[in-house]
Structures are given as structure tokens and as C-alpha cells.
Image (cartoon, rainbow, N blue to C red; front, side):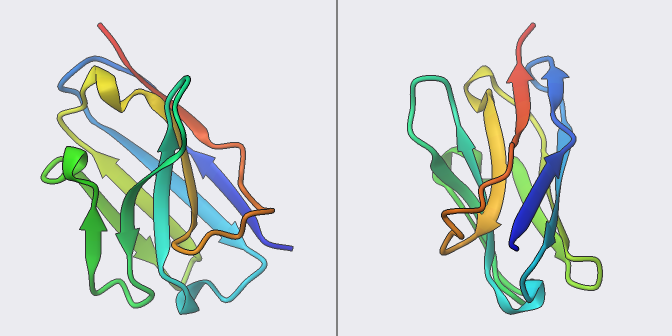
Length: 116
């Protein structure tokens, strides 16, 4: 079955950096555009960044442009999100999934907390 395992979250001070990672299984990873999503307390899940199947193109929500970088390794079925210049408003649980999500297969996510 489709499965996503996110890791790498933690507590970081404002202005700091963090890299979260995702291991995917159960589908042909290299054939799908993939995305990172996040959900802050009391808010709906939002799309943060997308990378095309080949890795050739990326797209970001305006609030993270210039600070976050999405990448993928199709040989390892993994993807990452490098987050720099973190702000308190980036605090959320971060999830990976396909751009058109496998809705029954959301992982546990990884908590990112930006606080001094």
C-alpha cells in the first residue's frame, strides 16, 4: 500500500534552518509530481512546495519562496525540504504526498516548531 514516512522535524530558533525528509513506498514514485504540505494548529492543511516527476521544475507558496527548497531522489524514492530563515509562522506539522494526494495514505508528519 502507499506509505509516506516523514522525519527530520524539531525545534529551531527564528532565522534557523531545518531539513525534513520523506520516504515513499507502494507506488511508482518517479512517475508522480510530489509535494510538501503543512498544517498549523487550528488551520487547514496547505500546499507548501511541489516538484515535478523528473525533478526539473519546482513551485512554492508565496510565503516560503526564497527560503525553502524542495528536492527528490527518484533512485531512492525519497524527497526533502530544506527550510532556511525559518519564521514562527512556519510552525506546523509537515507532510509529504503526491501533488494529487493519495488521500487515504497521509503519514504521521513531522513537527516543526520555530520559537525562541
